Image (cartoon, rainbow, N blue to C red; front, side, top):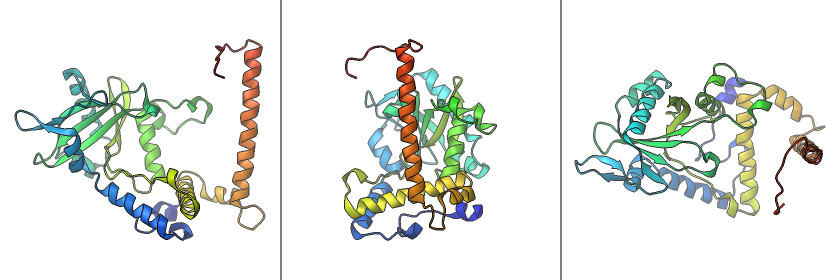
Length: 286
């Protein structure tokens, strides 16, 4: 039932979830990735991006163009935004966050998927200057496909940052406890911890049994997320369980239909250009 789905979690030290049997190489890959991720925490990040002020306090060490300082007006705007962000946290986490105060703010360039949006990082200190917390403050924008999908439940449609956090909290079995949202200069943002225990699995270098294991593992995790956010009974009914229609056939049929739809859409796009209903510049590289 739904309660069972919400209680399910995949742990890095329990690699046989979803009935999977892990091989020795895959287990070694995960163990190494987990060990590396556990070394990424606030103190290790401080050693990399922080430096001492003349008064002995901490500040960000500028690394242009990736990490740069902000002016006083932007700094105050971000700090004010973080005060409003705290109100979006559960009360007990808000209490914990109240033990910290902002000591510096910087602008940080993020990945290509966020080009054109604003992103800041904030350095906070607790009872001592060795008790630090890094928060990332990223602008949230409306998805390009939003006009073509059913609307988000209220009130999540009114704030893009809240929409992002709502989705993450739904999908993730164990998410960042400091996920929240805010508004800065009339722009929506969401807030999360920066690189805390963040790791990755090098699937691009995998072959054979390891690649097969991770395909199954990622598929199981994705299925769990869909079961949390969708109708698990309806999904099970669609996939089938009596031998007539299995998941592989259902996904293959959907993929083939999706390919056909892409071809039809592209034909419509070309026809619109040919009939001049849609203007398009000539590209010599296409």
